[in-house]
Image 1 (cartoon, rainbow, N blue to C red):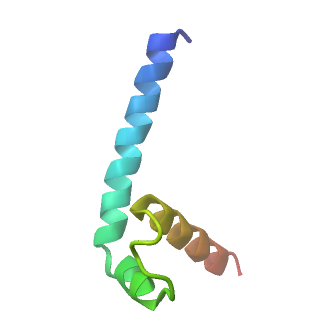
Image 2: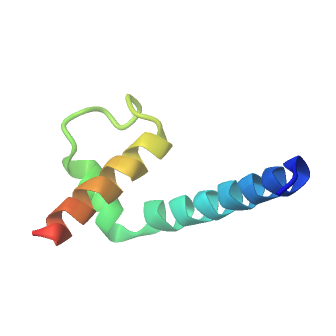
Image 3: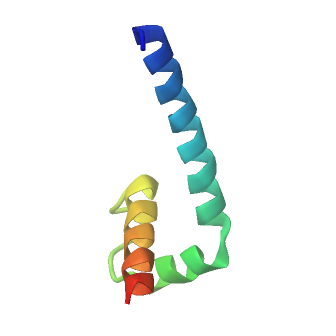
Length: 63
């Protein structure tokens, strides 16, 4: 794979993540989770919040 192909793939992945992140932040489950967090939402970036939400959700589902 050459550099331009790798760069194109990274851009596609970033675009997919951005779209997925937007869909997650729009869902009621994320909004409820966000409201239950003890820290101020602005302390963590939206990206960090989504990653934490997904991690916790997957950990819960793993049980």
